[in-house]
Each structure stands twice: as structure tokens, then as C-alpha cells.
Image (cartoon, rainbow over all chains, first blue to last red; front, top):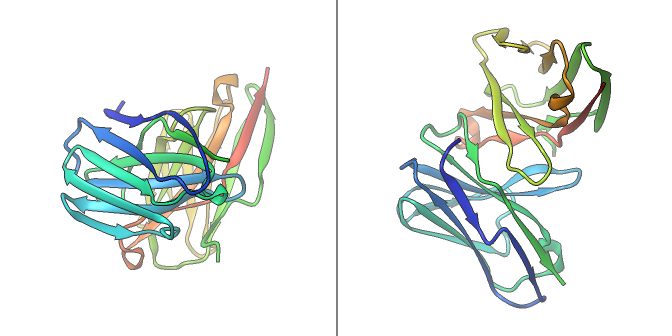
Length: 112
Length: 113
């Protein structure tokens, strides 16, 4: 298995609070991605990174920001959490853009 | 607009029989296709892929077929085992998607002993 960890694994937070999710890899892969999984929608890309300090928006980026200051870490921030952001969040890594990606175990976020 | 569709939310198959999971896409610029398997409370794991220059790719019990004219791909699992019970996602990528994978909604496969 690819060395990807996500923290926290579970989080409950209140509407309006900021939340940061962390993805850490030990594979030295260039590309990192954040997805959310919701029933009926599959996996939808939030943001991705193609190198340190290089990031771009995905399909559902509104309300989210990301940062990548080191190759191994990719942070996803919800500036002011809303109930619509209750979801399971997955980080993925790849050494070849648009080909196989390897996923972390996920973070279940509940916004009350 | 859903560019990758898995129209069957669920599928139930008897152990030992064939499981066929289907996926349709609308973007003719997609040229690489993947299948992922996901167990509850775990991340998706890569299963098998196929390039648009091929129409079939096999890996053990898993075979992916690609029909470009119909914009359709399918995953065959033979023989199906109870451990194959999971949610299966198809995904596609193409140069006009900026390198991103576009996922279908998933199909939940249940293999009954």
C-alpha cells in the first residue's frame, strides 16, 4: 500500500468554525489530490497539487482552500464549515498525472 | 453534467458466477479508464486500467472491456467471491480534463455465498 495517512480520521465540528484536514505521504509523489465522497455523487475533486506551492481548483472547490508547503503534506481547509460540507474526504497521490492515483483511508467530517 | 455514469447503484451475484459492472461516458476525449474498489471505512484501491488504444485488459479474475464507439466500459469478475463485495467506481481521464480523473457514482456489488 502507498504510504498515505490522513488526520484526523473523524471530526465533528460546528457550523462557522474553521477546519483543517491533513494528508501526509511518504512516497515522494509529485501529485496530490483532495476528493469528497457523497452518496449518489461518487468521488468529486476539490483541489489538487502538482508540486510544492502549485495548486489548482477541482470540480467542487467553493468553500475550500489548500496549501502544500512540503512535498509530503497537503492541507485542506474549510474556512467556515457549513452543513453541506459534511462528507467523507479522501486524499490521493500519484506520480503520473491523470493515471493511477492511490488513496488514503479517509476523514469523516460532520458539521452540525 | 455527469460525464461518467454508472447507472446501476447495486448488483447482486451468486458466488462463483460472473459479475459484470458497467460504466458509460460522454466525453470522446477520454483516453484512459480505471476501476477502483472500495470497502466500507477504507479508501478506494486501484484495481485495473485500460488505455483507449486497447479494447481489453486482464488481470487475474478481473477483465476490463472498452467499447469506444459505444463509449462504454465494463468490468468482469470471474469467478466472483464473497470478498469481492464492495463498491466499484469507474473513472476516466483525458488531455482536455487537465489531467484529472472523473469518477462515476459507484456500483455496490454483493456476492452471496
